[in-house]
Image 1: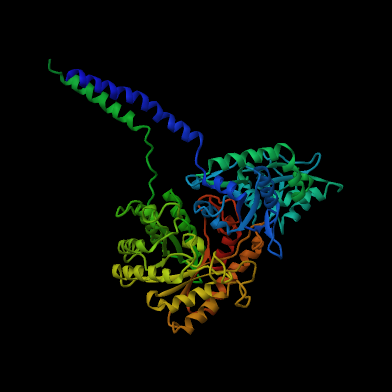
Image 2: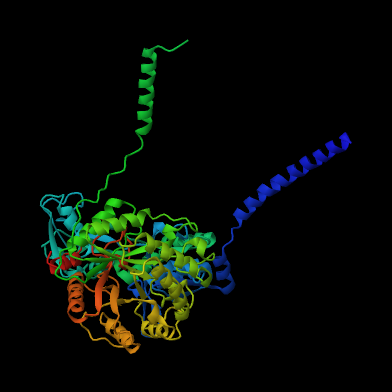
Length: 275
Length: 365
């Protein structure tokens, strides 16, 4: 009887030794092959659907026939090509973009979208593909201005814009910094050309095309730097339950950036200055 | 061996020192006091703005927001009070945050119009958004409404039940359903009145939209409102809440069935009158213009300031049935980094934008 009990105990021990590693191994296997409903859906349908607020040119707009066009649309098509599928876009208002991922309506958000950290429990983000924030525009060669030395300088910006608010804020702590409010961002950059201002604070999307058009002018302009406290990095968002899609989109984005495709897209939509 | 008095004293000093050192890392909370009760000075008593303090963690920022609202000359605010934040587990309430908001608002002399919504996770299915409320949980929402109103009885006189139910995204990404909203409203209205018979219940709060009948995103607000009336709406609200954005149009532009502009309010009013509800008042609980440099429906910052003041003025002078005109939105706690930021009156760091200064001047401040 005693012998039988020992045998039984050995049997249990042996089983435990065999089962435990298998149990642990199963976790590794599951983590090696994570579930990703969006990725499965994309490959079943051979289509990736992007949620896009099409009221934000030049990133996404609708033409008279209801066709999407813009930088984000071209980028979405290029990403889809790299994933071996076709891109489809759904027009969604900005407030509703992330919700379409949670309810599995769309696969990714591609819509001039900046990371919202408070939604990180629900969605994941790719690295940035475009910084649309405020830029310091100055003249090419001499007479420029540095952000760390604005004493007695004049900065122009569209009245009421983010750049205007920054200049007003900085002027409270910088001796002699003067604000030159203008009707719009074009006029702010013209003020720099004409020597009425040392620099202009303008959003990237306004700055790139204007500077690109003016390279042949007598006093061409350049983007001196982006303003770190007013950067706006655009990313793609996917559901937190889509780790494979996130990885593949990130890889595709990197490839688009390294092989020069991104530069071509930037030049197409924003001019040579955005290269 | 018994300790001498000297040893006892020394040990006492040592223990006190250890206790003091252990307490050092804990930073004391700044003391926020309500201060002297204030009143709003304004030449235009219907001026109102929609604040967004529900995600504002720091109490001093809540207070600062409300001081700036008062200084701008707005006697009313609409503020969002998310159910999900205060009843994270069923029956387990925590009203610390709304207590701060309501106490500071009252102290600044600002009347709060409380917007209630946002479904907690325990009251909805998996893979749904926080705007998803199914019939099984109408009672749970109504219970929360009753609890909220009971707590703030005498402090809050107006509540808005739900937001823009004619948009799919505000209805849990389902097909919108006026009858379902009515069923939810009935239950919540009864709970509100049971908690405080004097409470004024605002309902509707429809998003202005021209979506076609076939759309699965939204239903035209005017059509939705008529369907509500058909389902017995008149008995389940006291004041109609209406949203009226100007987009890129001037505030005095004529209303039309195929246009979205500020005076769409008048089309909504016609539906109220048609349904025998002319005796009831309205509150515009969202309106305004956007001054994003990129958004296609935005205007320049200076024009936005002009339109905003003119809209307040238009409502004061022409719409005696409108009790308050609330512009979207006073301040966000953090940047959204999209065109939504350009609806704000002040930046997250409390820098006034030009629209703030314009309204402040217009109200006589």
